[in-house]
Image 1 (cartoon, helix red, strand yellow):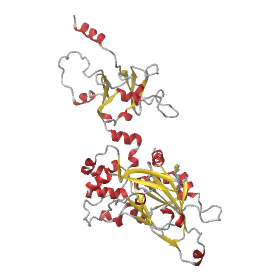
Image 2 (cartoon, rainbow, N blue to C red):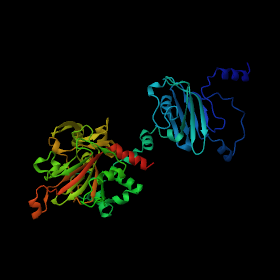
Image 3 (cartoon, rainbow, N blue to C red):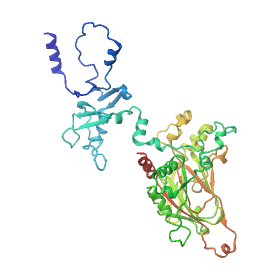
Image 4 (cartoon, one colour):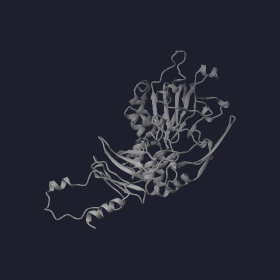
Length: 484
């Protein structure tokens, strides 16, 4: 049998799972072994460097491994090297109209509907401008679906799959949600006092630059300012607003609805609790059901930790503040935790491992839940964090610290705590938003200004704040959309 007959016989016996677009410069290889090649040609004269450049490897090579049920992509020009992707993942990630509804953008099948032996019967490279695409025709249909479909993938969609965190950052924009410590370079030792970086935190820097407050009147009409406000709220955990509107009817100096208008301007959804949508912080003396509604000092704490899912963000609008004292304080617990990990790793381990109970039994309510003081992502290795403290912010979910609702457990303070809190005297037309799972807030004791009218009328409200809670998903949703 001659050589041509042998080659024809081999080709007849080959299963044709893969085909290639004739217009594509790519190579598509079938199976883990190199395809059949003709015999070596006779020696030829050495080619010039210019000729060798024209014979370089094609810009895209797709190689199938049916035994491992995966394909491998190589494209030096696109920065893709030996990217292995399982067939099951590719079918499950299909974004075509038969798999994802074009209007609702919701998936139309279950992952369990995919046959385990599914594989491509045809692979086509679509060298479109500006993006190259990979088109796969599948061997099997999904359960209760007929006939088998095709899936089209942009290479940019697949590019970073071998780097899961980077792929997730690009698709889910998680890099936009990374917190920033107020104190970016905490000292390694509690005894150190010569680190000047510790003495100025980022909130103080904003104040010195005259950028601490965001003008609410400008925010209402400018999406760029809305974006800046939400990004600051998420990154630093604290944002201040001024120039809020007075009451439009002019009868009272306060506008009780202005906080709701502020949240609406930011396209945020209010989180309802048993306090309602909007709630008042008013001194009620002995009738108070919560320490916030007294004139007593309120040490650093977080709200509603007796809930399974405490509200992520809190907003407060000062409607009236005719008192002496009552200064609000804010402290970045993430900076404290970062310092603790460096200086007292075993204390960090304890606070991240031991759950603490929080409860509220009053006013016809009884809520209870346990949280660790330092809450980390599931499966986080504390030993790894101790070795690699730079990874803390990726692992940190929240800090849970609220002495009024728990048995005392002191959260160690920074060795120079005066550099962390931000004390603010509440003013009319002033509002603040902060991360309730990160920023500890406090209030000093207060009493009305000493004058005859105040002494005569005990029912007059001298300090009045309007508050609301917002879930994290609402804030993070808007940040992603405004960065689209």
